[in-house]
Image (tube, rainbow, N blue to C red; front, top):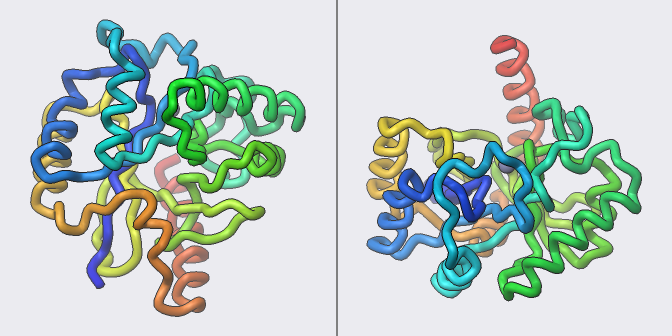
Length: 244
Ligand SMILES: [Zn+2]
């Protein structure tokens, strides 16, 4: 089975870079592609408002969900509260990691309430800056979340009773097995990188799958699953060390 690609967009907000996102949306409409998008329930992060706010934001989201896109809850306000790397050891800021359980629960519940009210809560969590800790996972479980879109390796696995679908890179590797989640931030992409990525998606559209399908792909063997997780974890650590 060739590599499957899940296309993930972070930082979906009313004031995101709609003009940069448009070519991706157009490709999805042309080829019927189900993206995974991380919606900030109540965006207070001014850096995420880069174009005029879209008045029909929630309606637009409901339309996308009806087309098979999966909506992930991308934090609550996207305001960083700590400088914790969290369980994955990525980044150095977090909206959640390091905060007491009750505080994390309240923030996650408030975000969930908004998405439930708008009819687009899918029970998937996307941590801002990939940073979360044991208390985040406990709170997500208590709030009936089913899955997170972070982790190491190329296949979904269980973490504290939640499904973790690994997310490693912002560029496709195409190793010939498993699922690669390609993490994109349209707001900060250059015209050239947008064109490259849209061309890639179009050329590989038969390999692009949705979140539900991605978490259902089982590793051919448990050993390959564990090996790929450990190998990708160390490869990324060394890569980040070298990059400084
Ligand atoms: Zn974000």
